Image (cartoon, rainbow, N blue to C red; front, side, top):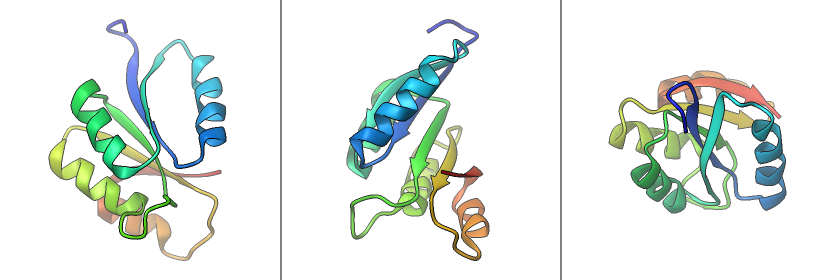
Length: 110
């Protein structure tokens, strides 16, 4: 990582989606994917270990208690300088507002 790169962590419970995101971000020299996580616990540990500036979170995680919104809340509570971006394939009314209330800096559609 150079001083001009942005360290990020990618969080998604689907390995193929992570592979696609890795490929997408690999083509961007200003972005350094420092870790991948498949669940909330891995995401928290990855942020503790790698200290990213941005976490890209899937809204729907394979965890009955922790979705992307709750993970965003937990990450922002532990890492107040971490910026979270939520992405989703859902078209739920009010989702963007809930994401921003949880501390997300952006919401992106898949």
